Image (cartoon, rainbow, N blue to C red; front, side):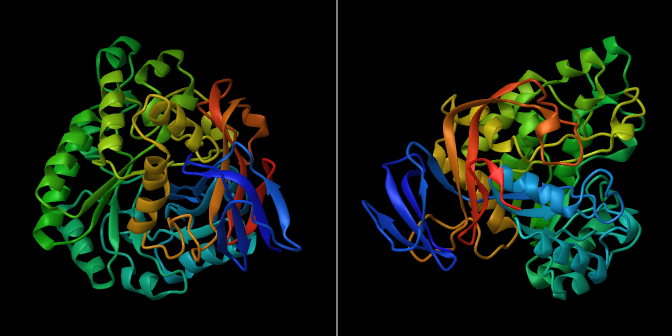
Length: 428
């Protein structure tokens, strides 16, 4: 069915009508009409390109008790996403063409967002030998992003070989930057607060040392490097230096690292345990500035659902990770738009255009213009919503925003012209 969106404000600018026909934007203008089209009243709503997430954990196969491709896709659509990259730390690990094709097909069956599998860099995420990178790239899933996320590719010779290998098909290695010998037993950010709370610290240098090493390796071999979930001020400075040298490096920051600090750990509530850990207020300000000036390219949710028994326990035993898909845009609105650090075009750039470019996705991150694929969202920027974990689409409930009022509400999401969310409700 065709859809006529009436009175939307693309990128927060002047109100127009947008006609969606056969999966594409057929017309943009004033007082449009179309016989037989379903009319969507979008008065006062901001229209943006559909969001693209470079960093989503969907848990399937292996941990369907925490999330499935379908439930994670529904959460993504409700958050305004039209494409997500599914990380490789499943069970079995997505280190072969067979597993990535399974995840890709599950995404197609769900039909709510484009699910783009991320392939593991090493077999079993063990950091010992390269996985089947070429086979995954040539598979039906057409993998272009490879990551051992959850584990650092700590061996520099292995990391170099991975960077060299993916050049053949314009792939990118997405590194979880954590020197493991510096984070043994780590529970939270290393600093005065960790000492006072008696929790083993995760030093900023453990992240920064790997980023510094890897940007030099990427420069040496002329490959593309992506840095996952940047969390420290020092990391931002290293990335800024690397980009000034022309290194082909990109980076992402999570919503929770833009908003929450290590002060959350004082509650000993394991919902706030995450890897890398929540950092200081000074780090938050540096991350926001880095996202604003483009040093950090993208917002990646690191959506990490966990079953109740893996999260509701003593802090030391709890698994690290937080839900992120449904509230990502609201957190960016609060931390970046309301303070004037990004305008709506900036949000589209950091949450759609650049992530799609990094992931080499066709049809996503495109302008809201005639002839382009109709992947877009409609947002009510005036709404304020109190987060209720029980009302989230995810199979898990480990949201760090429980009880927090956040700005903005996704009213509709369209995937190739078909509404996956309408009136704030998932359509499947």
